[in-house]
Amino acid sequence: MRAWLGFVVLFCALGTPALGVTVERVPRPAAGSWTVDLTPSHVLTPAVRAEVDEMARSLNDRGLGQLMVVMVDTTSPRRSHEFALELFNRWGIGHPGRDDGALLFIAYADRKAEIILGDGVDEPDDQVASDVVMAEEIVPAFKRGDPNEAVRGGAKGLKELIEDSRLNNPVAAADAPSAASDDVELTDWDREAFLSTPRIHVSTAEESSSSPNVGLFAGAAGVLGAAGLAGSAWLRRRPRKCRTCGTLRVRLGEAEDDAHLDAGQRSEESLGSVDYDVWWCSPCEDASVERYGRFFSGFKRCKRCSYVTGKQTSRTLRSATYDHGGEVEVTVRCGHCDFVSTSRHSTPRRTRPSSSSSSSSSSSSRSSSSGGGRSSGGGSSGSW
Image 1 (cartoon, rainbow, N blue to C red):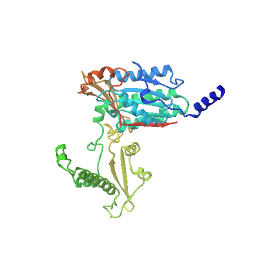
Image 2 (cartoon, one colour):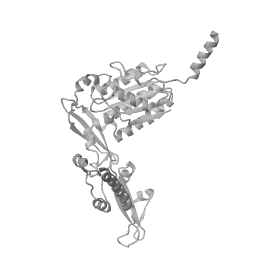
Image 3 (cartoon, rainbow, N blue to C red):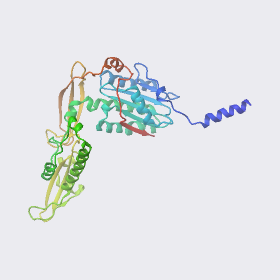
Image 4 (cartoon, one colour):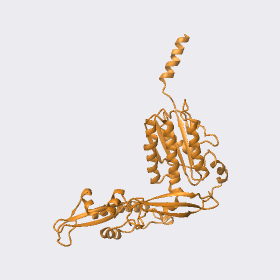
């Protein structure tokens, strides 16, 4: 009888799928620690946990953000991204009013990895950086069977993501190219298209409360915007006539037009900051080159060669605090002529949260507890 009961218990244990830990049962890390490893064999080594804790402590002490690493065995039956997002918001990873947190979450037995970014470090550039960390650091290391290197590389990448974010580099963000910058040039036809586009009046909050047709106006603005983009594309591809002989020009392909561009223009195209169209007239053997600057390419105009081939990076020399401003060093390195320019800029001091809970949360923001941050779910997912 005992042997039979033992067999039944063993059968139930083996036949029942493993259930993961709940969000509520994931313990917060102890003070001074920013990692949690709930895997049965405690996959993370003490050395890696100490290294991650030091990265996270450095971020938090400088007021730049909060970084946490959590590793569990399985989240079954819940999806790992849903689990990680709820855990992020339950703990409030990040400083209040800044939402500058990042969570690296691993469901080891499920072979799933998640990066959850706080809303303050969830700009398009941050999303791209998050995808790179997941694709180049975390997933490959797990595929090699090296979970500790996956966590070390992932944490290092997220630390750099937070440090380089627009939230922590306001001067670099302000210097980013815009539609009105000299990094973008329009052809005469494009200027005509933009100038002839009807202007849309955007109502204020008081106007919207008294107008029942705000949705209609918004829809119309969207339609007009789409029409404007389509019209701009058509103008760029419209047939051209040679002003000398009247023959229709032929638009050359990407490989053919390089012969009519100089070295700097080819560098701009290869970097993706500017696109060129070359229209060829056979009878006159004449090439007409038209320039189209790309919005938000991330490249700056080089002060030496004047091509839009400068890649801008920034480094924090002095972090802003509640008592004083900070200082950043901005470097622009040209990908065409290799010219490097460096400048320093002051950043405004941080603003204290206006909520009454700021005093109670300030002490926790200096520990591994939550700081009041929130995420809407931005980040990256990976599996191996």
